[in-house]
Image (cartoon, rainbow, N blue to C red; front, side):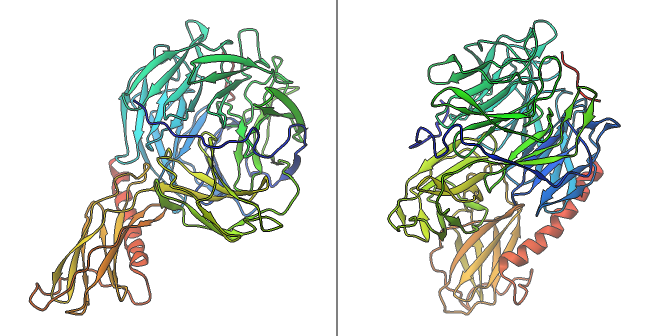
Length: 587
């Protein structure tokens, strides 16, 4: 049976009232016009875009937005009509493109490309979904029903169960229970596929579920805060549609909801047109084109409590098939895209949507380490957590970047400058935005991921030294350690190990003095949470003599020494692995 991931304590709407207008503003344009490109939010809060097409053909390079500026990303070697990407638990980005079985990894820390393995099939316009365990499901594409999994632990692709129906340009989303819903799409036999299926990662199999009311492709599919999925817009047999419907996983039913104000095909989002779930729980739908391929500049918001769409301003220029990214500050960044009327035009322009929030002082959340303890309480510090009068109760608002899923918790304890949640339990792998909400006013978000620490260490005493051993983290969310750093107390001496080794020797200790030890896993995107403290271990002159090995560098922590050494080792390993190793038309 699939594990259930709870959606707790959600208000009808979290804070924003429908009809209250957001603000649209121009932002710094990209260097290169592009559409049908991939875009992702990275662990540092910057946005990266890859590939796509423009009037000159395939766009080979990428760009990265941070600090109100764009910087270039070298070409990956991938080109295709549609590019797709997913940020992995490692912080690296898995990128694939139509027409190629090769995948690539973008390392945002090194600003470099790495091999991403070879897929089991060449696919055009499949779905690409980050699973709850950190693997990636790629399903369908071209005229295929097959599916496959990418495992970041091993860097390999393996076939998994096939769907009952071949489909491409379909919609897909990770549900609250960790399964994946795919809806409709297109194939060469039936046209728009009148069916939906659910993939269960626990069994690697697909099951038929109730079919959508309106078959379509290039539609948007988003997970709402109440666990239902919103399917909206897309291309039906007669053309672009305004139709929207809701899938209830508990009841296995599709129910019509209010239609959009405008037909939208290829809305701004991902290459398969996901809209954006705002922190308020409203859904922002913008861009796309109608049946005549006229691009729509106007935006609209969906309110699940009323089942209605409300027009909310417009972009400076109508376009389709660009990207949209929710940022930690709550704004939405929209990049590129194209219009086909009156003539095909590709855009480098970037716009920003700022949603309205209630008036009042906003709480401020301090930066926290990216990697937090899986299943444990989360503590945030900052200011203004009890409101203007000092008597309000804050809430923790967690939103998963991959599918927009929102969870809320009240405090286990709090002050005006600190918030500690209850234990969060088993959340799906992914990058999360952690906000504090006070009197309906949200803070900007801190970005966090969740992983287990290394196992509680033990030690074997020697002469002026202790050999420390531990077990690797039981759960990493698709973020395997590259190494480990052990630290002694008192004194802070330490040692490091390169994964998969799980022991090292701390030297320079004082015989007769008891020491305890902790271990941190060292991941590609930072230090993991600290382990439990070991039982005391006392070096003795009767034990083995000091071992040879790495000598800690004065002035640097053991973790810093380890990260320096591991960076060199990782680059060498990557170099070794390297040695082994036009606009889409509507169907």
